[in-house]
Length: 276
Image (cartoon, rainbow, N blue to C red; front, side):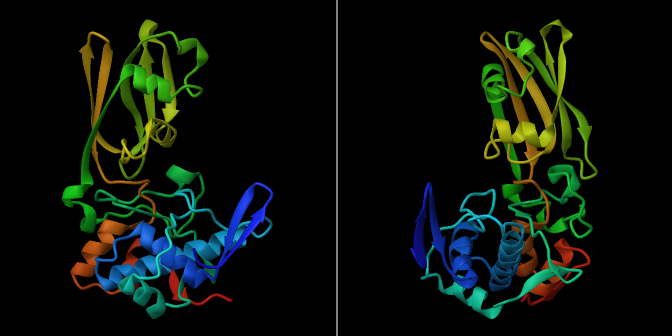
């Protein structure tokens, strides 16, 4: 590890400078073999995200943790390309009205980013959904996932109404789509024609975000088997879809876009600057 370790009751805290923290974040969040410009983008985005959380959590005993709820962290001081990207952009963050933005990012938009309000119930003018041609045809954008009726019901335990626990899950349909065509709400149809509407993001996180990679779902098919229904989902993209698409940024960098252009594309109406 780097920095100072503090043990505080049930918490183990690692204190270190932001620029050193970024070495661990970028090592965990992005490939050091990607183009230099996209590494610079990730350095600026992750630095901005960190400063925003530092301000938000100023009354807590910690600023960030090392999970995907914040940013993943795996300290490595030997990644020359990552270290160079951090050094070359030292102190630069993304600003909106002279304040660090909430710099959400995800793996792949699947061709269109998402309005932040459709995922996190907050409206931010610089995080509106936009068409993303740089991540629309990526071969890693397409996915499929299947789960049995019992697996889905088990995942949704505590979310499904208790009175439906003993009922067979007959179908899952898309009830509402967002402006980006992601699923805003699902409707679960049980036997006796009992129905329950569930928020798309609630469903995805419960079922598993690594399996149900995004809510940009193109189809849901069901197959009846002896043990019950099996539901198959297919779609595009990976992640919540808000803000920077890492694979889209990679494609832009490979086409010759500079880090400033990439950031301006995904975070509309923002500026770059320093923060004291």
